[in-house]
Image (cartoon, rainbow, N blue to C red; front, side):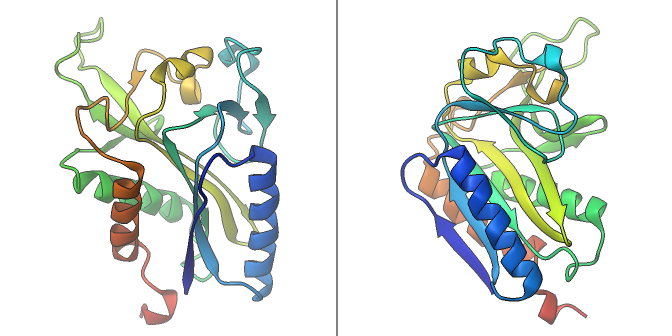
Length: 221
């Protein structure tokens, strides 16, 4: 069984990390079920294990939290759905790369329910959308915006941290960092793409597509 938990309001980041660590330990010990936890945070920046100091352009704008998840700097804030993924990767194939790819597939399948084509790019973490209506890059390639970020950590083969999907955050808040260390492209959201998507709409889509990508390991094979 996978518990689906939705927290109302804004969840304190340190509290969220403590809850995730406790739940991951319990999953690893077999005393708790896997969980998907859906939250929103107050405006903040997080620094992953690969974060570069120069990518924090405005260090005094919002609180900055160092975190041991993979990746670089990310923004969290109201209007962004943060999906904390606490799954037993050991029971799901012992393959970290495939697990990350499955997270990407989950996001892409979820976006597809809103007729949004999400794509992945070599060398650029996260899920991207092409913006043909915006000016091309200097080399003539099309402008692409990130709509979802991914960063996880594993402990005893149980994952925590996870995914953030932009529903309707204040996109100017991303200006204080180089998101995930990527320059030359932008950040978008479902509402910025012209879609009247609400947080409950996204939550429902995530729940519907989840078993397509992450079947019950007891039912596999």
